[in-house]
Image: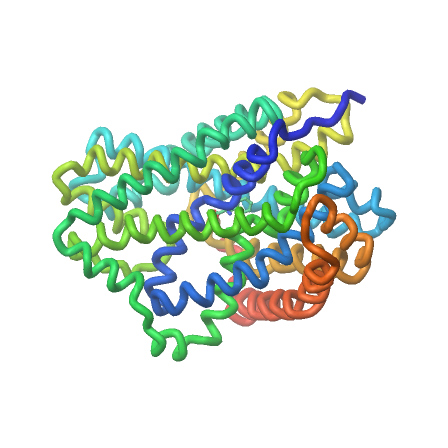
Length: 443
Ligand code: PHE
């Protein structure tokens, strides 16, 4: 077998992981939920969840990946726990599942880039969304988006993913800063900031039991945990570096981009007098498009904005495809391009129902969010904390200046607080699925 690929540089790994983390979650969900759940006071809860729960969970994945240099399934076997491959398999299946509809939304974004150039959505944004979000057009663009993802992954770790994300992540930040600066100049923008950032402890207290699980779930999804993505990316690390330092960098940058997105979207909406209190992926597309339709330079702004969203979505999608591709590269003798194309094709097929009818997309999303993700994170944490345990500590401390104290803090946090938080999230998810009825497919 040829030698396994690695990242060329440490920065390359970090940027790829940030690229995975920064995605649709940061730009669509984050600003809106923050505003709705109490602004700055929710931000605080989210940051506590991301740092206190996200970092320990991310470290668990990093340790498994770097220690074994293997894909998310075989890693468990190499550590000596063959039966635990099931946890890796759940993660891999979750990534597969999520990418199938993530790519459909990526297709919408492509459509909106075109629609900004031609001004197609300007006259009736709501009707436009209805028309492009499901059916033949959505299906075609789902295929295009998937082809882009396959193209990057086929080029490999260093020449594909690392080179691409090195370009993509800084571009996203620069363009968002530019858009935020523009939004700042709009009359009425200050109301947007007030809505986004003023702490509303009343709203926080009133919905606390809903907010905490949401913050935890959002931290997992946004940090790309629970689908083998971080295990896989860490498996390409060559050499020892401080995983602590890397994970803090990734979490901070990810939160920063979410906040930046809020500083773009909310002032834009308020300046145009659009109610941001809408729910669902579609509603967000419609509200932002409505703002662009009314602004003087709307075509250019819309174009830049949706290009940012596209890049963010792409750099996340490649990490999802890489999880499965990595497994096939480690286990078969086919070439990476053949594998990426074949698996990309299967994932495309799985996404057909979501592209055809948004009710399917919602169903797929619910199942991933409420069941697969928390289940997979739980499996990884129980494994890293309780089963693998002490040897995980050794791996974690390699290349770091921190002493055993920090390592033990990680171990016990992962074993207790984090597991409790994940079990809570999982139970609530099960309730949504089985009591709330979200498990029933939209047949
Ligand atoms: N973190 C991405 C986002 O916020 C989603 C994602 C999840 C990407 C899992 C890859 C793996 O949109």
